[in-house]
Structure formats: C-alpha cells, structure tokens
Length: 106
Ligand SMILES: [Zn+2]
Image (cartoon, rainbow, N blue to C red; front, side, top):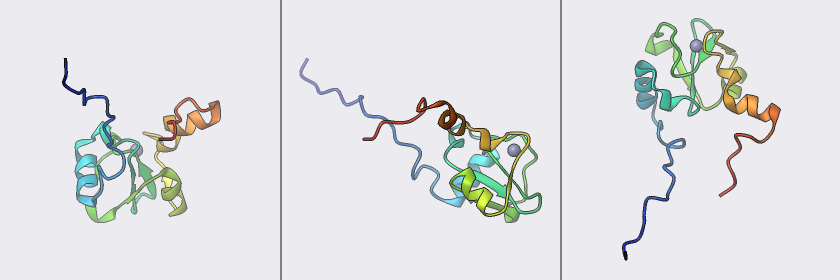
C-alpha cells in the first residue's frame, strides 16, 4: 500500500458554508439541519429569532435578518423563539456544564 490516505481531514462547513443571505434563506426554507449552529434568523415583524430548522411558519423574506450567533440577534433586539429555543443550543448548555462541546484549538 503506497497510496496516501487523504480522508483524515475534517470537513469544514461552519464558516463560509452559508456565506450569503441567499444560501441562508435557502437553508431556512428547506429547514436544513446542517445550518443549525451556523447562524440564526430573526423576524422583524415578530421580534423573535429562530434556528434555521425551526418549524414555525416561514416569514417573509423582507422581514428576515440573519445573525451569526444568538447573542448577535439578542443584541439587535430580538428574543429567542419559544418553539425552537435557539438560545438553548448545545453550545450554550455545554458552557454551563463544562468543556464538553469545546473543539480543541487547531
Ligand atoms: Zn423558532
């Protein structure tokens, strides 16, 4: 066996994967579970922000804004959705319990 194994790399899909609003909106419309954790979306008319996979009715595109984190959305004046509870993500819970979900520094 002389071939190099190239499959040990980790697929990077957080940063840059949902880089444009078009991609983010498409993920919201599809309720793409891969988008959860990459960003949240906020709805101006209701004043709440959601995970991309939230089962709530789709808002109108012109009322939607995207935020990288729950903290960003909260700072912009939005409240977490009571349905999908975006602020109770695994990351937020893990930070209380301990470094369970922490990724090691590269
Ligand atoms: Zn929601």
